[in-house]
Length: 252
Image (cartoon, rainbow, N blue to C red; front, side, top):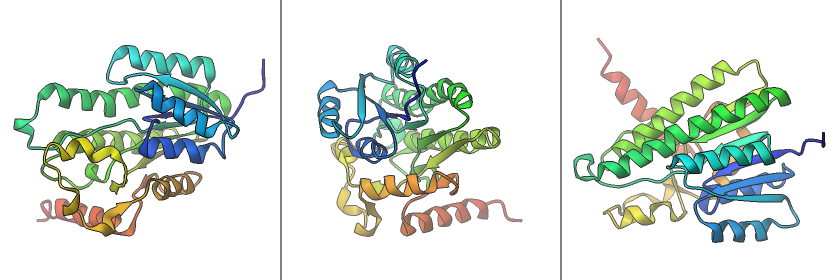
């Protein structure tokens, strides 16, 4: 049997936060399995990282059963993965009653079902390796409810709760689980939302972060830091305020 190579699998890897995870993990790993829907962006990322890390590109739509199956097969053939980053995601913008329900269902499938399925596939391999790490990219929206992103926030709240509970189950296994809850990031994530009425300029500049600093905060916290990671002091303040407001309704 060939010697195992330190391997990371990253979904939503073609741009934004996912691509940045691949860049920063290139310094920590020997192999990166980069997963996204589009072939061309993945090929561009592979060229960028050539010479730094071995990159295997997997074009797959994780809202579809066959896409998840393709990634699980890549995990079997090119893995096992020491690090799994469930980053693939999207959001719509607008009141729930006006949004197409099929698009909302796809969001639930991607954020909840696909991430859960890949975790289930990866954990036994990580146990055999004696440890590993799972980073589930959630959102500040999981902690701060608001208009315009009801299903998005709910799906990310599922992923956050799942991550915290899974961490408890795996506490003695050597496998770390992190729920990463970033706020607004300067990527193309909000482009489609702008076409639906989202206004970037309505968000204070202090709340926007760069992908590199979010990924850096995540990876720095991974060895022994908190399970729930909210990058940015302003974002943490928002999360605390939202939690206190929700708990206020329980007071006698």
